Image: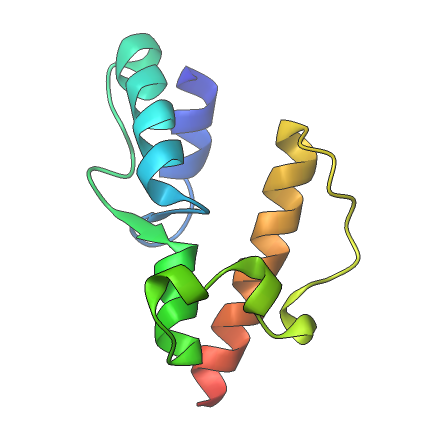
Length: 104
């Protein structure tokens, strides 16, 4: 966890934790960061991808599920529920959402 904090802290800008769902993932990771590294490089900054999707799609929160998201937001990544695969899949999804946001 200390190496992770050092890596994130070495990146440009102020980091924001992005997750789907951020409410669960942020608290889980934050606890580990505080317990094992003594600090969080994210402070209390987290962005929930489902909420971001809600704003991009103009739908309600409960309607803003992956099933209802535009297909072009999804790259062909395996959906295995393994942590690294999930992180890659969610990272690609967020990048595609962000690209749509920047062009709107």
